[in-house]
Image (cartoon, rainbow, N blue to C red; front, top):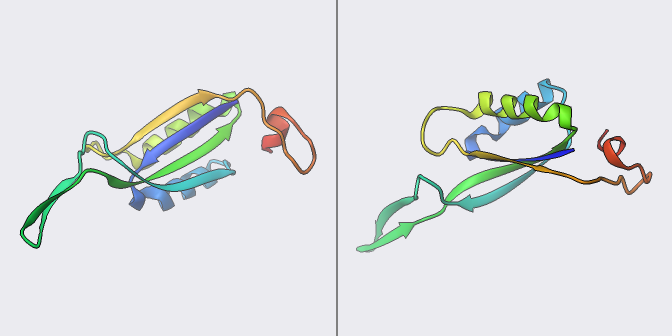
Length: 113
């Protein structure tokens, strides 16, 4: 099993959800976060004082999928959010040892379905 963590622009979350739904993927978690990467934020003057906004709003989408689904999920996300501009985001992939569905006690990939 793989954990896929995608950090994307907030305005793209609905498109990603729809794209994943159309690909038959369910079971996602979505977090509102703040972060800083190559964009580095922006500066504004508030009451004559320069204020540096280092962190930008982002969305973190997290999925746990079977190994054979990981590449298609990653491609789906990339095709949906890629603009070619700084700030498109990043995707991180990590291995998951096991999963347990608490209600039934199912383990492994059975717990994902």
